[in-house]
Amino acid sequence: MSATDTIRLEDREAIRDVLTAYAHAVDRRQWQIMQHLFHPDAEFQFGTISGDWQNFVEQARGVIDPCIATQHQLGQILFGFESDTVCHTETYMTAMHTIPAGYPTPEVFPDKGKIYSAVIAGRYVDRMELRSGEWRIAKRIGLYDWREYREVEGVDMSELAEEARGYYDERDPSTPAASRYLI
Image (cartoon, rainbow, N blue to C red):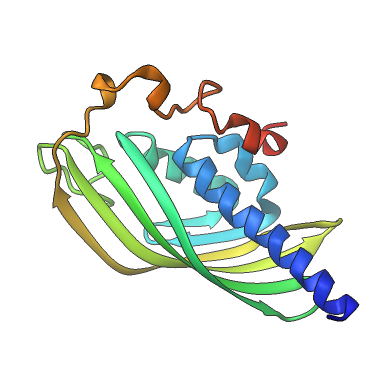
């Protein structure tokens, strides 16, 4: 393995950390993490959400915060290095959203008058750039490959023991794993 290959492996892992931290930030409602994942001039486009990354966060909060729960699972990632400072990635994702009755943004998820699950399968197509020693997203295009709505039961987590539930604040056991982004 050459020195260039070793650097590329380190770069791939740094990029993978950014992609993973994005999913964590959305699902744990840790919106302040986003400032560490996007370059200040980054662009974003996914469905009805578009603009700069700050605008994305504002719009995403309106979509995600009313959900009872979400989980974004990342799959395979393709890395295409254009140079030592630019890498194009394609990341497969499946995002589950538990939608409440009375959901306020029907252009994203319809209000069905009852709790249901919205599953989106798609891809994040990113331009990652290394600036000032940090890989971050410079441009993101989100693509839908398919989506479906499912009837669900048992989504009320109140019957679970408190230590078995995930949280959207410092009580969540994952907080130490994301601490470097929470500064």
